[in-house]
Length: 370
Image (cartoon, rainbow, N blue to C red; front, side, top):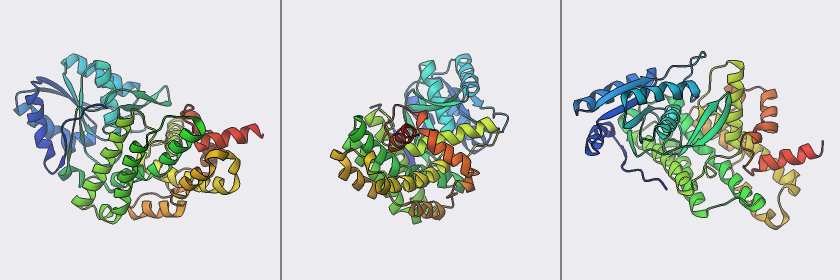
């Protein structure tokens, strides 16, 4: 597992970035932000680092023609050229999950470390080694590097937009179905599995759900709980070396919707907002399959897997949790119509064909019967 040291989650954490860099004898740094996160944190972070005698170059990633900042070839090349021209020794991701994906792959390509400075508790990928990138219009997760340090400033995170906080909560809710898919893949598909990593993820999920009222109030305590849970989920992925614990069929639906919106030239939706809604849809489907299609579950593991499905809250419970946080709780509220939902349930497993999810098995059986 990659060593991430320090991990600072507290008010004023941003003030520790410059001393961290100075203590490691860093002389040249690239900061990557977008136009919004530059105002939130990029400008002040740059000034504090410069005041310590370190040379900085700030790259503000250009949005695409729809106005979205996405982790695609253009964004990576924009940052990589700046990193090379500045001879940067460290890349600092100042912002969202997308900016972290751009930073982590660019740092990996340049052979230098990156540091995480999130501006919202919106995803669990801040400390992941996987970089979900859009390459030639297709979503692909590329193995890159995790951050060498994380500075999560609660003064900043508590001021994050409500939609981004709800998205972070939605990303955590997705663990209900990802954990089931991982268990299914291990028993029905022979995938490697770690009960310790699964339990670590489950505890982070339970922390969020058990404190959903506090998170909904946007209190410092609630935002700290959500942030720690997201980062803990990231550490679970690092511990296992892959994303099975945190990414199953609900993420495949989310990625499918993202690619569809890109093809149609539509504005993107926050990742966690899609994952939360997708989790409700997968919950509905899996509970139905447990009753209607027992043959999908290998006989020797059937009882265990059916018990695992019962651990997944029903779709209405998941939707009510999303509503509590103020997030969109149905596909329609995301702008996803019935045709796209049906098509995505039929095809989304092809995004990660090596993942042995129940959705994949269901589609394979359905296609065989056509």
